[in-house]
Length: 569
Image 1 (cartoon, rainbow, N blue to C red):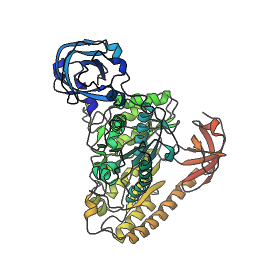
Image 2 (cartoon, one colour):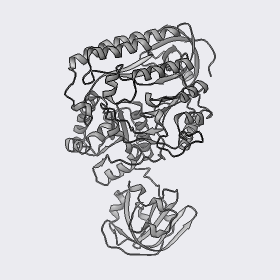
Image 3 (cartoon, rainbow, N blue to C red):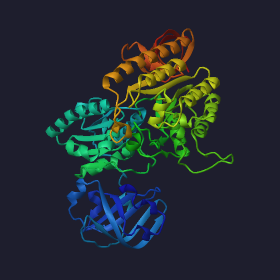
């Protein structure tokens, strides 16, 4: 990561910088005079490094007019000054882009101050992001959008008029991968007509195919994995320097100083853990999102507090295995448990002013503890909705999937949740047609849905994914059999969802209104505490972000319809 190469040494003697490359902001023409150039770089600690060199190193001023950044290799320095926010390297001998080197006295550092990131790079140009897949991808897109706006671009809803198009991709299903390739083909043709169009291919498919995609679609400017989402600004700078960028290497996640461009003004995603350490035999996520990396609790609290100040009413904590949060953070309590867990985090953020609802997803049955259940029952802002995938209702299939639990263990979790929170809504995920699945094993999955009566289940036919063990097995299930089983399971899921919805009839639910209905502009859409989508008549300008008491008059499988019966809050 070029931004961080030398920055660790902000408060150390300058000798610690010797031999390293310092990524600096290219100066404006006023900083190039009498052969003297003053460079500036933001140090990781928050200080500013100012370096002066003679400009016989790079006399072509036109280079600076189009290059946003430079790399200086620090070879020798006779003086080091640390003064407040400044880190001054005086009489520095450096090497720039392979040119000869020299040393010179210091310029006035105030003359060197330029933005740490080019805020005018977009100059009002337009960008559009197309997002496929899960909530993690949606959150990544918001972070990328914030970074892109930070460098001067503005968002447009029209992908075909955008000067920059970003595809944020999902690799979970083969169909999603094919879909994004078809979209990309049109934009690649656009770029052949307009070379100034910037094309970015991000997300899990990008991580999965990497350099192969650059060869397949040479029109692409950037192919970047999801772990690089908060670096898109610096990657774009490389593009504008004339490079085609491949960013799929593993990096340690750092706190993102840019602000996401939130799609909603009511609800906000908050990533708390990246990556996945599980090795389910069907899943590409560990290969595309890397190992688990938990954010520091204080950083999460700060983001939640900021959302509260901005007027957000609800947050959703995100992670591939969110209840595994904190496993990689140091510390053990006096009771002998980990010092940082999802349970501890819920207590930490619960009382943030302005935030009225807290959700989290997705949970793994292996880590779902009684302590977490107790916290959810105790904390009123934590909503009674749980997404806990079971994937299969058969123990042998779960073992082949390497899920790490049994059906009995899963069933026990659901019963304990319902004992503690009787009205809790349970969502799950299930796969049919996993390699080797027999009719009887599939029926066990249907039986589990009928027994536990889930509020909703996200279902899918097994899709072989690259670089996963199950994709290489010979006992693949025929596609027609998978299709038939998926239809059978969906009938059971829909019936269970309808059964669950009937309990709302005649009840008054507190609905947080989020948007206007796409089908009927006279109606608004919100969600109950149990995450049931609810429609009611109303004016979105009055009701957006308000919690509305709604009497439920009609209950469909996945949607409730009602009317306002009380005061807003």
